[in-house]
Image (cartoon, rainbow, N blue to C red; front, top):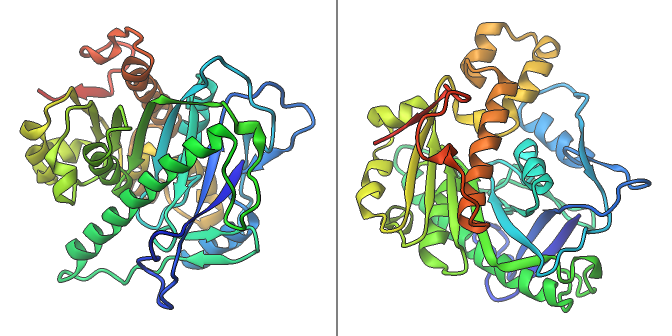
Amino acid sequence: MSLHLVDRSRPDPWAASGQPVRELMIQVWYPAAAVHGFPNAPWMTPAIARAYEKANRLPALPWPTTHAHLGAPVRRRRGGWPVLLYSHGLRGWRTEATALVEDLAGHGYVVVSIDHTHDALAVEFPDGRVETAAIPEFTDANEVELTIKAVDARVADTRFVLGQLATIDYGYARDGDRRPLPCCLRGAFDLAHVGMFGHSDGGATTAAALHDDPRLVAGANLDGTLWTPASVAGSDRPLLLFGRNEQDRGRDASWDTFWPRQRGPKLRLTLTGAAHDSFIDFPLLLHQAAPLLGLSPDEVDKAAGTIDEYRAAAVVRAYVNAYFDRYLRHCRTDLLDGPDGRYPEIEFAP
């Protein structure tokens, strides 16, 4: 289900009109008690799909539905389910990693994905408004400054959402229009076991939030540069760095800066043949859309990597699940201890 939240304690950092409050949309995936009679959720709403097509100068495309069911009842578990927050990449959106998110929910996590308004490609609110990206265009002179501002705003979003999850779990929360939120989520969250993961700038957000907020137990950065002082400062809690081959060849010095500063457990993995977006849904969809868009195999490989898209999704699922199982569920798994013949695409950094 999708929820509208309003942080009345701070203004929107990107709204040109000086919006006095910060509005967010979050999407919650969870283990379901039953799904019969509940429709499948779309991968993107029609309004967001049109915004994506317009932004990328694409024709209308036949966007998929997902395996999730809208409004299905929560499967109950004593103490609630461990919680994972997801932060998207710059100009991404909250459903961009649905293949991974659904898999995590299917393994017994509640996953809460945050749309970072005006940083996201587009965000649709319950009243029909669609707020598009409002971060200024990057130049060589402003890229670092703007990205740091964006990550700092995302960390504030994350901390606000964590507080809202507590009130939702108690059954007291209200949405952005001050209406009570659905009571079906009451008691669904195990907020003593909360992790976070993110792609690209969402990975930087994860590292910074882990440093700033002790409510987060563990984190995973999926191919994100660590832009801010907080994100490279490290913490005493575990962080996974999971990226492309280029990262370990020194393309991203921020990972090398972070490594000796991290006091808690740390792990650095490389997915051979991956592109930047191999950690989200993009390659799965691009291969299907390529004939409609007239893209050659070489053009697809350049954008989506040379690893098979379904294999990439399976490998990312396996390692992200194993990581959070170890640190949130305290399940022993040898998958994280070193190379495994089942996953030859994975390299462990020293």
